[in-house]
Structures are given as C-alpha cells and as structure tokens.
Image (cartoon, rainbow, N blue to C red; front, side, top):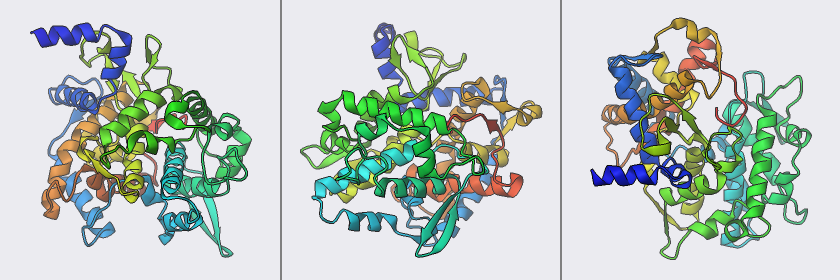
Length: 418
C-alpha cells in the first residue's frame, strides 16, 4: 500500500509524471491493459481474435525465411533501408569519412541516423525518390526512398552549417531549414507530393533549437552526434534504456503534438480515457514510436565503434501502420464497425491510439510464435529481429496484396507519427 501511495504522490508532480511516461515499461504495461480490456469485450473500437495469431505468425515466418534464408537476421534499423537496391551506402559513407578519427566517424553515423529517422514518417502513395548511380536511375518509395534521399542530402552537406564540414548535422543548418530546401533534398514537387513536408521541417527546426540550447550534451556546434560522447561510458558499454532516456528527455520538445503535463512535453504520448495510472499519468498512453525506432537505429553505430550495447530486449515493438496493419489484415484485430475503415483518422483519435497500443501488446505475443516456427530462441531472435524479419515486411506485403500498398486505416499524417 505504501508503494502505491508513493507512486501516487510522485505522479502528482508534472515533472515526475512526465518522467514516468518516458519508460518502455509504461508503454508495455498500459498497452497490455488496453489489450486485456479489448479481449474482455470492453473496447469501443476493436475485437481481438486470438485464433488469428497463428496465421499472422505463419506469414511473418514465411517472409522472414524469404528475406533471410540463413536466419541470420539483423536488428530492425534505419541502416537496413540504406542497403536498398543492394547498395552498401554505409560502406560508401565510411570511405568518405576515412580521413576522420574513429570518434568523428561514429558521430557522423549518429548524425545521419537521427536526421534520417526523423524524416521517416509516411511519405504517401504518390511520392518517390530517384537515385542516379553511374547514369542509371533507380526509383525508391516510402521508407526506403526517404532513407536514400536523406543519405544523399547528408553527404551533400544539406544538414551542415559548415561548408568545410559537410558530413555532419548541426543546429545552424537545422534552425534555418526551409520547406523549399527540404523539398529539394527529398525531390518533393507538386507532381511528386510528399505527405507532411511542413511537419518534417518543423521537427528538424525544433531539433536544431534543442541542439543549440544544450551544449553540455550536444557540443558546439550542437550535433546529434554528441550523443556518442554523452553515452558511450567509461566501461565501453551502453544500455538501450540510457539511449532512449536521453532521447526522450531532450527530444520530447521537438514533436508538434502539443501533448504536455504542465509545461513538460510528452511527445508520442496520447490521451485514452480507459488507461489507468497514478496521479497526473492517468489517461495517458505513451508509445514513443520514432524515439524507439531511433534507438534501434543507433545501436549499430555504437557497436561499430566498439561499444557493447545491452538491453535491446527492453524496447517495444513499433506501433506504426505496417505492424498494426498486419494484425488487422491477419484477423487478429477486427473493427467493431467496418465503416471506420472508410474514413480518415487523426493520430490523437482514440481509435488510432488504441490500435497502436494493441499493436505493441500483440507484437510481444506474436514474437514467441514466430520464433517457434523458425526454430529460434529469444537470444538468437530478439524482438528487434522479429520486427526486421519480420512483422514490418509482412505488414507491407499484405497491404500490397490487399490495397495496393495502402494501410487498412487512413491516417492524416503530419509527417511526425506515422
């Protein structure tokens, strides 16, 4: 009883309540509470059909075997998208960074990963990026297209304010970023429209403000790569929760959602009336999708720098429309009202918030079923590999088969959540 009282008292303070909601334990706990509620028939929006989990696991296992026949599955990470088209763009970046120190190389890798992930929200069905390689054009769409576009923008110095140091991202360039400049990087035009361009500019400009305001963390000039110096530690290891905590502490202010407790920004954390919690945290569902996607994507730069990364299994599945779409397409989730699939929703709508929560909770249940079908254990196939193998690709495949690539629910994206 004393523990509950202490939790209630702590959560009565805005700063402490916001800190509570920056935990993946809270993401999981509150998502599971909504799943249990839906299974009990209390959800206004969804029913849960557990018989569909087996079919979903079959689909994920089949896609995983196709993508990784040797079952040597890497982590789900932005770096996979940099490999699209069979091109090792990381090796190309390494070659460009050859004159730099090992520390500067990893800072540059972190700079690229951060800006690329923050640009990685739904691009829309009509946008694409054309890459010219030795006079041969290759066209990429969606996440892969955004990855390749951001890679080219990075190596061209589009995110650096220092012409003598193009291979960096810094506060000077981000704070002065315009829609016109970013549209040029992403080849966005009226004939090649990118969903949420203005939202992406807003996020990157806000990131620039954060980098400039915290020189003790991000250095001078403020760079995302300062995370390396802040986190690598004397022991030569870093825990994923340290990475995520730093991102959530410093980056929560960059999101334009406007979700706050007091004057403390919450980021990807949304209201749902059925979510319990102590004090000021009641009714809030934290998800932190892009922050966790960024954490997954920062693991490899640290590893490449010789830093051991622990605690990867504490991160959650990503609550986005490919993973969530797989669960709807496989019949694990069903809409109570099929008419809901015919309208456009906003990220703050309770249906969308709950769909994302159910996605997080069900991915945890789906993972062991996938491992069993592939004959792997959690050590060889942690959740990060299930996602990569995996659920995201299976969700994309079902969307392509059923709706020409569109998700099962239409979301009005501002380029910062989906």
